View 1 (tube, rainbow, N blue to C red):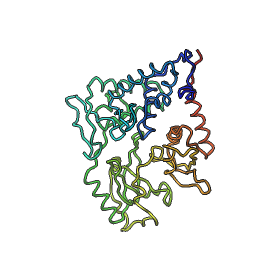
View 2: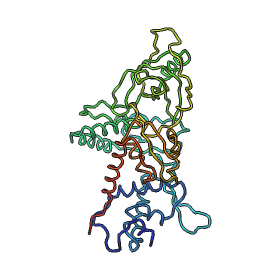
View 3: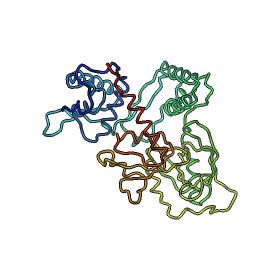
Length: 379
């Protein structure tokens, strides 16, 4: 049996009438390449990407041409798919250069646009600037307005969040004259804010500030006990105990300094105003958080099991806390459940949820939707 048949390809001449959208095929190809840390051959790709495998053996040449077009298109967008030679093999291998797989900075061509502010040269050193014309800015604004006009509050929230992220590089794109949502660039960190935080850390004095949510831009007042500053991926974060979130280590939070506003030291009581929790280790908070742990909301304990500890799935054992009596299980604290479900799905069944039961149900429902998306329509 050929690899394509093992992958579930249909018999020659029985291809589906439904055409997979090109963008879905691109995402499938990128996901496949990102899952492999070593170079892969075209035969590997053809079996691993559903739309290529669907062509079957007789359609291998057509699938190969489609892959070449997709590869050229993705390279045009800046996706660094490299062709590499493997010693002892005459076959071309492909690899996604992860270290350079970043989106470029956006630079407006408008005469009155603010100058592009880059982060440290040591971070994203290879990034270039991508010029954006005024017509593209207007197109983004118009598209955002149409999405809001659809009346779906979830979509409206998501498009506003996308505009806020665009505003980091293009501050003027985030607000059109008829927008009813105030969006704008992030305020850069100034020396005065850092000095206030540093003095409070040294004296063990509480800090009071307004914290801006990255999701919807709302601000909430916080009074916290500062424990330390850490830098992650070019950004400064304050590690602090937030009494409004509870007691003990569960109330420890990381606050991105660039989203802290009106920062002042609490002068209502003599110092020291708090004691650092026993066992606190700043190094534990200096690690990059997984996407499902980001945010300001409450966390939920969720347990998963690695059923096939190979490849990327082995890395899942490095997350969370071990479960007594179950060496292949881990418990993590999740703030964004839907993101966590997608993270589990990315392992292709090698990692599965265990508890709570509602998580298992959501994972199964998401899996069913994914299968339905890729189901072939009978000819």
